[in-house]
Each structure stands twice: as C-alpha cells, then as structure tokens.
Figure (cartoon, rainbow, N blue to C red):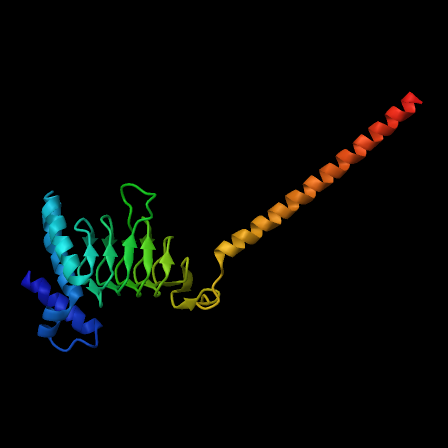
Length: 229
C-alpha cells in the first residue's frame, strides 16, 4: 500500500508542474484521495461486500467530487487532475498511466447491458469535460480533446476531437483537417433540412397524382357526354 502511494505521488509530480512536494500532494490532491479510496472499495467489491464498497466510494465522492464505481477495473498510475465532476462507471476498464481531467465521464448510454462502459488502453489522456460513452474501446496512447463526446472506438495513437468525436490525427499525421471547434455542424438542423426536402418531394408527387387523376376524370366525363349524345 505504501509502495503504491509513493508511486502515485511520483506520477503526480511527473505530470503536474504545480506539485511542489510529496506532503502537499498527499494532503491536498483530491484525485490521489479518490483513487486510493477506490482501491479500498474495489477490495470489498471483489469479495462481494457490495454495500461496504459503495459506502466507501460515496464517502470519497462527497469529499473529492470524484465518483469511481468500486466495480471499475483501473490499472496502475491513474492520475485525475483537479478531478471535480469525474464519473467512472461500474464496467469501465482503464489501462496503465492514464490521465483524466475535471468533468470527464466514462459512462454508459443506457442502451447496453452487461459491459456498459468504455475500455481505455494505456497512456490515454482525456481532456476536461470530455465524455466517453458506451462499451467502446479507446486504444493505447490516445488523446481525447476537451469537451469531446466519443461514441465509437478510437484506434491507438490517435487524437479525437469534436461532438460527436472524430479522429483528427493518427500516428502524428493529420487526418483530413482538424474539426473546426467554432463553426461546428448543426446535426439537428441538417436533419430538419433533409425532412423538409423529403416533404417537398412528397408534396410534388401528390400534386402530380392529383393532376393526373383530374385529367382522367375529365376524360371520363367527356367520354360519358359523347355516349349520351
């Protein structure tokens, strides 16, 4: 336990330039406290003492603002920077040496059963406010940009940005062009525009049918007049 604590403190020093001393990290870093509470809760969870595990995790949530379900599987070296608002779901799997910033959600979509939460590889960085949802896989060395919403698998060594997220870089090479974070596409408006076009086409077809039917009725009426004559 103490060896792991020393390792975690060393990781914080490496990844956070604001960290000045081991004592400061130990006493003030909420991410470190949340991760160590998770380890205790996970120990009880694995022995099917679910209530005790949830009590420990909820106490940590109240103290740190970070909610880690005791059923999650987390590798070594996880660093949660700032941490407020981080949520990690029950079936989440996190590899080694990952970095999460504040507001990150590793959650479910509500549509899946069993494995409902994402799997992160090693050395994954998830930016502030990003959401990774569903039983998807994020490869090793992936970077997820701030406020991105990831709903599909991301292969290793890539950078994902945008809502919904798409791959902007892979293996250090730009993929097409980076997503414009200012002039983002309005998916709802695109759907509305498509529906308007469909309605317009249907109205035109209906008008053509009515016109054709009117011509047929006129021809039938003319034919009846000739017969009467």
